[in-house]
Length: 488
Ligand SMILES: Nc1nc2c(ncn2[C@@H]2O[C@H](COP(=O)(O)OP(=O)(O)O)[C@@H](O)[C@H]2O)c(=O)[nH]1
Ligand SMILES: [Mg+2]
Image (cartoon, rainbow, N blue to C red):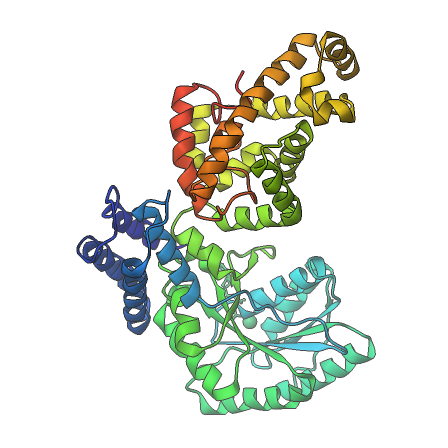
């Protein structure tokens, strides 16, 4: 998927690497490569033209952000612009309604309509917990009915025994009656393939849609991504003729160019709702413009990471912590809170993998297991401390240390080690706060890759910027990550 674009874009970004600032001169070459890449990917020329203009305007107008290099900044602009031409947020059909929702599946022959109908039924039942009825309404090819029923049976989804001697409109209406009577949430109606230039068949389809209008149907057109601009034209004609609520791009697994994905929303105005990525029933994905843009630019799933971080981190907690840090009050409890925030994100290794460029670095560092188990150990040590001790570690004398060692099942030296390192960290708070006010938090010294999420002004792409500091530190403290707290 998008292989060609990924490759070409990464070449274009190289042009800006090492530049101090984005200027009209040095961006020209990169932009022209971006343009060629898009055209070769069969992206609609109007889309390309607007895309390049928008990126140029933004790139030149952009203020230099501290800690972000021009190349990263350019990548971010291209990313946001890619996401924006593909549409805004995902627009799955609204399933929260009274009565049965009909989803009419339309498109040319052989595009993947029947396959998609099957996939969608599985998705709606498994992920959305909806009851589904699969309705075969291809009255031209009896084999199409068998194909859908076979899929339905294999997934244990209910299907409608359509009377193929009646019209598609009659089938749709009687299926809706059955679904309504039986309180089925969604009826997916799989229609016969038809050419958008075939007046008669298009009229027939319009009739089906109009008959369903009182149920406020979704009309999804399935288009083979590999057909590029042809898919775009067909979507536009279908939309003008019967009105679509969404497009499904099928065979994305075989499409190396991505021209349809990047043009359909812009040209036809219809949002892409799903992408079909294989022949198996599970091969269906929601269309996430921002994530796909990330995939095209080969940046790892930065966005998922940011989302995950945002979910996991309690903003109020973070704010409170900031206040305490400003007052230079960083206690053992604060430290514990931070570790808990990080743990909520998941295992360190998988967090790191989501950060662009980290994959390779992980290979250099090797196992993150030690850092992980160190975190666990510290949590146990802290939980064996009294509230008083956690508020002021300075009262930890020999007898207290002995008690904590016993309580946590660790040797005394581990407790002392923890205290020493906590002291070091405390010393770093002042300079760190200074840095954060300067706009470039570098908390890698605290053993937290990419800074402490939710604590600084740093979001999203800034993570890439602290990769750099991470790299520096790593080279110093060989074998550690961050060369900070969790070094052994
Ligand atoms: N590789 C791949 N093949 C697909 C995908 N969707 C459908 N197909 C294949 O495309 C062919 C036509 O699919 P079908 O659903 O019968 O198309 P319809 O005529 O529009 O109903 C079949 O061989 C499917 O297995 C997909 O996402 N990826
Ligand atoms: Mg079919």
